[in-house]
Every structure is written in structure tokens, then in C-alpha cells.
Amino acid sequence: MKGWNWEGFFEYLTNYYLFQGALVTLGLTVFAISAGLVIGFFVALMRMSRHRVLSGPASFYIWIFRGTPLLVQLIIIYTGLPQIGIRFTVLQSTLIGLALCEAAYLAEIVRAGISAVPKGQVAAARAIGMTEPQVMRYVVAPQALRIIIPPLGNSVNSVLKTTSIASIISMEELLRRTQVLIQERFLVLELFVVAALYYLAMTTAWDLVQRRIERRFGRAYGAAPNP
Image 1 (cartoon, rainbow, N blue to C red):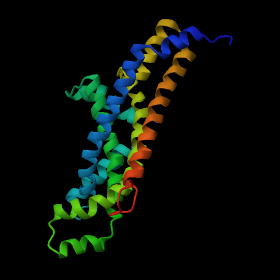
Image 2 (tube, rainbow, N blue to C red):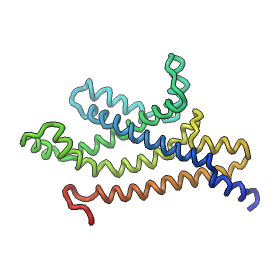
Image 3 (cartoon, rainbow, N blue to C red):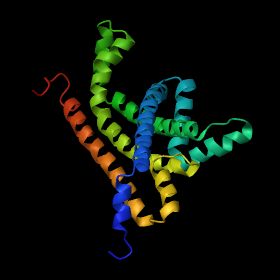
Image 4 (cartoon, helix red, strand yellow):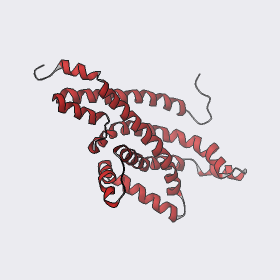
């Protein structure tokens, strides 16, 4: 193929430098989802509160982080905050930006899952003397989980690709390392195709995992597990 360097393509397909970048991408994804889920859970509870002192700030937080691009958020955290004396490293800025942004989306997912649990079941649980933590653990959480898992799995897939935005502040994930190698060899198309294959491999692998998780938790609440 004219203009296509097969030797360079196969060389970088197994390049350890790019492989490390892919591992960084996976690490950022795991952190963003884990931290985002913890933050999002508490934001969701605040959002559902009848007290405006709690629901107001939660709604404002979700509005801000869902309504602005992650790219802008990262630039503000990394280059804007130092102007008022708050400084973070590239890694810290990336982790903070991804976690806060993802938490806003996961908060709505969690809220939707909790809200979908019939109020009559919650009332019945309280009527038999269950405490609020017990109601959440034994009644709300198991049912909400079945609703939350599919969109949560889609969020993982999305974050895997969204981490590439962190390259704008020089975070050395997969895309940034691809750009560095392009500057050395000028194999633009070949290297971007290699990066695309890495992303495709990671998202495909997660899709298989997500399908198994959904089959495991997607059955009716209280049903016996598949043999």
C-alpha cells in the first residue's frame, strides 16, 4: 500500500512504550470509576434529600460538571487554579478532573436506580423495624444495583476513551505517547491506527466483562443463580 509503512505499523503494534501508555489509560479508568462512584453515591443521596441545603449544592455540582466539557475542566484545574495559588501535578489534575466529572454522571445513574425501587417496599421495611442503613442494604441496594449496572458498564467504556483528553495537559496515557512517537518517526497514520487498535482491544475486553456482569446481576431479585 503506497504511503503505508507496514514495518513501522507492526513494530509499534507491540511497542512497550505504547503498552505502558495503555496500562496508564486503564489505571486512570479504574480510578475515575471507583472515585466517581463513591463521590457520586453521596452526591446522589444529597440530591434526593428534602433539605435544600443538601439538594441545592448537589444539583449545582451536577449541573456544572455535566454542563461543561472535561477538556475545559482539566485546563482550569491544571493551568487556571495555579493563578490563585492552588497547584496540582499533571497526574493529580488528571485524576481530580476525571473523578469529579465522572461523579456527576454516576450520581444521576445512582439516583435513578434508587428512585426506581418501589416506595411501598421501603415503607414496609421501615414498618417492620429496619433502620435506614438496613433498608438501604437489604431492600434498596440489591434492586437498584440491577438498574445501575448497565449504564455503569457503559460509563466504564466511555471513560476508557475519554482519558485521551488528558493528553492536552501532557498526561502520558496512550494517546499522548502515540503523539510523542509520531514526532520521532512521522508515521502519523500507522501510529494512530495502532492507538485505535489498543483502544478497541480494551473496550472490547470490557464489553465481554460487562456482559458477564449483567447476566450475573440482571436476573430477577431473589432468583437463584444460574448453575
